[in-house]
Length: 329
Image 1: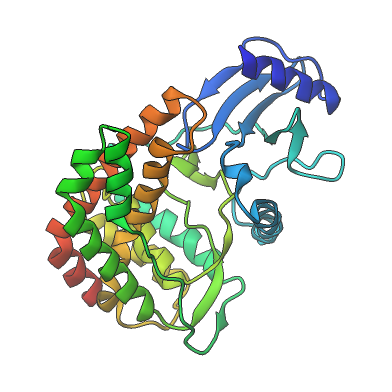
Image 2: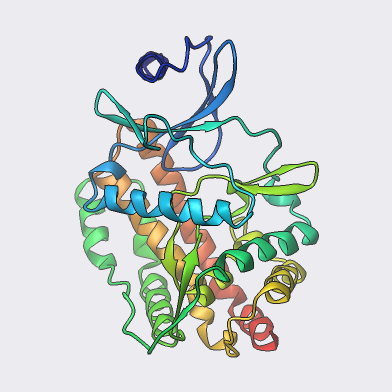
């Protein structure tokens, strides 16, 4: 196993001890690879960062920012599993591959189909505590808008005879409408900026004896709390599996607003933020057409294109229900 050889070399270079085979893949995110690695003295979770992601402009600056924000959150007593600092740095490199090493965290990730309202409440509480750390109220600024040219992707997919072509063609108008709704919502956001963890969906929270702890903090950044709370409340409430439960959305917001009030009073007007999924869709389209390590990763991209289009279709069906709930918050 190539990963085992590379990780063994990594541990040797960091004097962490000889690894005890096997190195076990751990299910988790859809961009990077995670492994459980045992030595004679300790167990670790090792994240192998996606080489395609590491080629992006400013990627190192973004990771350094996330590492600094991770420390701020941890110092505030918010439960996180932080990457280990070894030889003065968190990100480790061997043979031009990049890794984060974490202490192994006991517990489990809740199945997407069995998330309880109380867990949504606790997740909302954690997000509020993060947002309350460094809020900054500013004049309204022009946000970064989505500008995906779906017709160009359809043409490129058609030239390559990819299986995603019919999916994209059939839903082109829906994707354009979703992008317009997303951009209109972003233009209506209030001028608030704070620390956000927009990747704090259920797969990135471990539960140990009923207590949550966040993992996978590489997406920490500064952002808009209104956008963040809407997106994550829907993810915790079933939007990812197309089984949205409005009681869970309310539970998430209850946990959030009991711990921090950002002052915004018009959530229904920015319901279009639910369509942020189009950006995940674009990433997976490019994974199918251009940027993937192997055919296994391309297959993941195809699956995620299909799943994400289904979610966007589902959101369109549930628009009125989502907006009505947000208007009552």
